[in-house]
Image 1 (cartoon, rainbow, N blue to C red):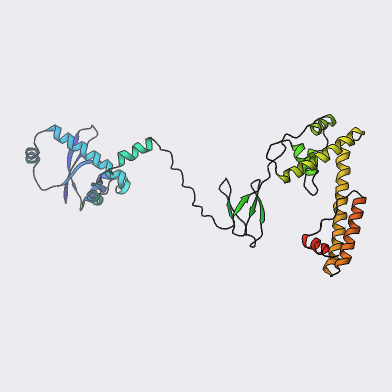
Image 2: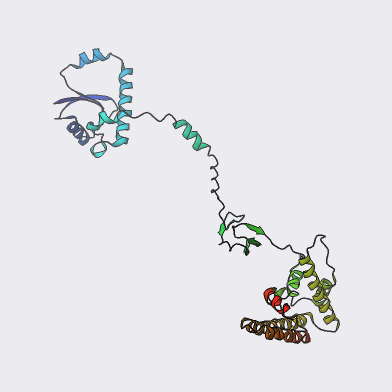
Length: 322
């Protein structure tokens, strides 16, 4: 087969020549081996150049435009994947010249990329309250097993104290702070039996500064509960005892240490007495248990300790004995 090929020569002028090749693919291989980049390829039908010139018109502008279109098409085909050695494959020409039109929203997409929008805030996860579940301010969910009916379970979470009933409902029972400074808060706990306090906030301080704090009167809130007044009374008694100890020349740190030892011994003695009383009570020796309780409390009083606190049902059993 003969092919009529139009291409640009070394001088930049268009050249038309005939080539022999069995197929269009073989033709492009031949052209590629010769370093020729075709502008136009057509199977030669024997029509003379003069006739073709009449059919296409004698317009150099039309030919130039056709050449530009051919070059652009060749570039598109090369980009999409040409034949061997970088030359567009003629078998793919028909399939790939039909480039799909751009999407209708291409301009909108580009505009959206040019002006990025704030990402949508995610919706908070749905929270369905279940018995014994508590949601903290930070979104964390805690689950506690509800107590038996008629009982209350205390729960400490997120710095607050709650009471949980058998239905799994929570009630905030956090005690308000009657004092503000770390010293006063810990001294209040120190004044109450069995309450935890941090010694570092009580010891190692300047004696005069401690006196100023202990001499300061409590500022009433106005709606104190009976429990709060009981705490304030314990605070006041301990405050006066500390001031008296210091007036007699003692150091406040020594006062804290001595009272801590006294309190520990008091609690141990009361626990021992209660254990002996309950042993007799469980054995059914109610009268002996009552006598033991009376003797234990006399010993407590002699040592300046608080009396043994009996369970309500044990105290009722003792009261029923005449």
